[in-house]
Length: 471
Image (cartoon, rainbow, N blue to C red; front, side):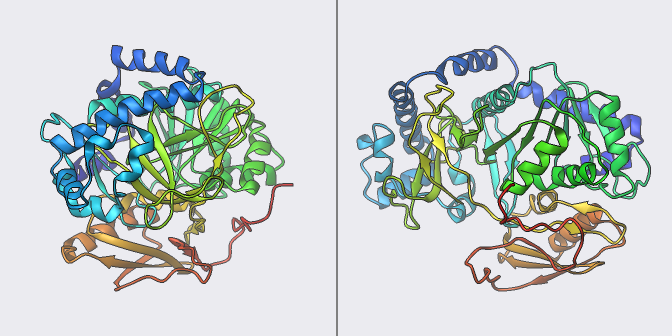
C-alpha cells in the first residue's frame, strides 16, 4: 500500500517506531497461535526422522495438494486436461513428473485462475524481483504458519532463541533516504528485531552502525550477503571485530570470499539459507555447514532440465518446487531460475532431511551513490515488486551519478507506472543519482550465458572478485 509507505516516510521518528511495531504486531497475528506452536513442535521431531518417513509425509501432502488443485483451481484443471493428465495417478512425489512444470510466465498469465475457489481470506505478496520481473502472489494462513516455522527453525539452528534480538540489514526503507544523521535504525519490540537501513551505509556512517550494535549488545545479525559484506569489510579495514553468536544470510549467492570475511569480522559462523516468496522451497544450513538441508516437510524439490524432465542422479538441474502448504494458491512443479544438485550422503548432524549443494544464482555488483553510500543489488529489488507488467529489467551504473534502467515491458505497462518506478528508485538512491529508464524489446545475457541484473561500471573499493576461493 503506497499511501502507508508515504505516511511512514513523512512521520517523525517516534511515529515510525509506532507504525513499525503496529505492522509487526499485525504480521505476527497472521501466523501466531496454537497451530503455529503445534507445527513448530512437530517439525522439531520430524527433522530427525529417517528419509523414508519424510517421503511418506510428503506423499500424503502431494496427494492432497494435487487433488485440491484439480478440483478447486481453474488453471490446473484446464492445463492438466489439455496435457491428458490422469490426476488419480499422482499418488506421491514420484508421480509429480507426470504433471507439466509451472513457469513464472504461467503464473503471471494465469492471474486469479491460480486461486482456489474456496480459498477464503488470502494475504497478498510479491516475489523479490531479482530479475526485475516480480510476480503477484497470494498466501493462505497455513503457508504463513509453515513459512514462519521454517524461518524459526533456521534461526534455531543458528543458536537463536525467541527472546534474542537480531539486527536486520534487508531491503525496506526504514529511514528516509534524505536523512543524514543517526539513528539509521528502528526497533521492532514485537519480534525483537533492530531494522537497520541498508541505504545509509557509507564511510562516515558505518562507525555509527557499529557503535549502536555494540551498545545494544546484539548477538545475531541477518541480511543480504553483499550488504553485510560492506559492514564486515569496514570492520576489518579499521582493525575491528564485532562479535556475534551467528550471522544469517539469504536472498543472494553467498560467495566463499563473503563467507570468510563475514565470519572473520563478526567472529561467528555464517548460516546461509534459501527461500522463495513463492513458498515452494526452503533450505538452510545446520551447524555442520555441509550444504543446505531441504525442509522436506515444507515442500518437494526436484531437479529438472529446461523442458521440465527430471535430471539423472548426481547431475545438476533447475530447482523445481511443489509447495505443500499454500492451498489458497497452489504452486505445483514451479520451476525457478536457480541451479543446484543434491548431496546424496546423509548429513553428519544426523537429520534425515535431504541436502542441497550451493545454489547458483546471479552475482550482481554493488551500486555506489555520489554521496558515498553502498547499495546491495537486493535492496534495489523492492521498487520493482508492484509491477507484474515488467517482464525483465537490468540496472547499469555507467557513471558515478547515473543509472540506466532497461525495461522489457508487457503491453499493459503504462507511463504512470514507469514514473512510479523511477520515483521509487530515486527514493532509495537519493537526489544525487540520476535515474533514467528505457523500454527495450530484449536484454541480452553475458557471453557466459549468465544474466546480471545489476552491473556497476564505476570502480569503487567494494568491488570483489567473487570467483576467488576463500583462503
